[in-house]
Length: 195
Length: 420
Image 1 (cartoon, chains in turn yellow, cyan):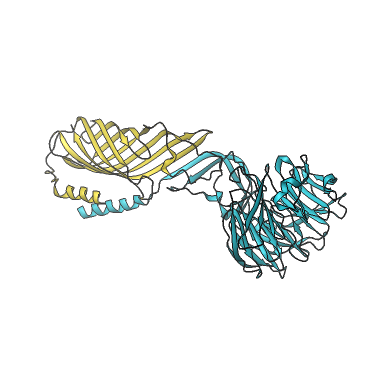
Image 2: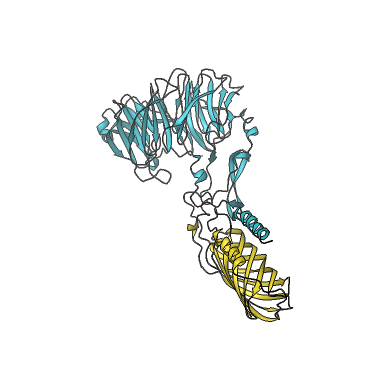
């Protein structure tokens, strides 16, 4: 909450939107690199892990862009998300709300998934049955959201966004033992935009 | 506008912080098969005699042998002529493991219930009363090569397991939840005892008894608690009291006004001169192991058995002095192979010693029992034994055997009822 207050406060106090009449030419290549949190219930074993993403894309039109993103996240282990990113800017101005949609696959960076995270042990295990060692297989993600872009110059701007993240991760152990982890998280991001 | 946006963000944030991660497990495991509580309470009935399939505890009264068919019910054997026992009838009692009889009333556990059954007329056996939801929720033995699926107690009791593909949610706990590992898993191999005669009109229990009767009081022990019922009126089972008596309780033995509870870590002694209010007297701690207890006069005999279910690999026959109930003391311990039940008749002690077979000792000198091995029958494998008046009733995985032990060095097989 403190983090959110800082963001919203700084957005209100430090980032003064330029006049709406200030229009840059929004076309060609861009990069958005953002950092944020995937926020869920405090009772989750990982209530607010970090998400670091970078997106390289092109403007298809002045208000519509498409890109390819990757990054690193720490949901319950380390993952590399690889995804497609689409954005629609409401205005063709420096300060513009936008909607975005991301979909892709997260690739596990750790070979093995440890049982030490706690949520596996709820199952009822007979004495001589070994709790399986899961191997992370990764899984699908999609992430719709909205945000605000504020350009300070032709080449540089800040991006704030709020989104919904749905993430399913697959795990597999011996004896065809599988585990599906479904995350529903609020995504809060702050990023920089280069053109 | 800014405040509205902030408000929306805050509301959204609050909504998402309520979101718990969901974990779904898919595996091949023991999936419970349920019997509803309604069906359970209508299930006790008499049927035609049936073959022994998985015999458990035995009980003897008035020329009849009662053999528990694990989790299924009770076989009644007319043993008026031990050389020719007659399988007379069967009582279906789902979830049954323990029995005790007073007069013409048989008391039995049926999963979480205790039922009183009128056996005065063996052609018209009927349930006469029941105390519901008084014993812990228990589950039958399962295939330990597979994990257990979640159990929904609202659906009823678990009567069995199917090995199949299970899909279930996992809670997001950050600490171990052992669930039913701590429940009272009913298993015939856990604990053995001979409960002895405890009053007029009460039968003799075999090994593994967790039920015992003295006067008008029925005692039932589960893994941790003792449940005390008044049975002065068989038509109305009344739960008088229940309280914790330790952990890993396995056996119960009553001698006069003293109650002995055998657990995996020791033996507890209670004064039951006021039957409804046992008073703790003392405890004797020993190495972890399964420990049936029999008591005669001022001596208690305990067999400790090691193994997977019992903690360690100590296999012993331990003799305790209980002359002073406040300070039971070990007199001597004798190595054994893997003892199960035991029974005593005067100075003759019968020990079912696993693969070593049946051992018969003269215990006149409790400090030199090993020097007075009267006989050993390595071909007699049993886990439960009742010796009465020269007739030894013995139950094992392969059936009920009866021997004449008037001459203990030359015991004679009188009859057997084999497991089919």
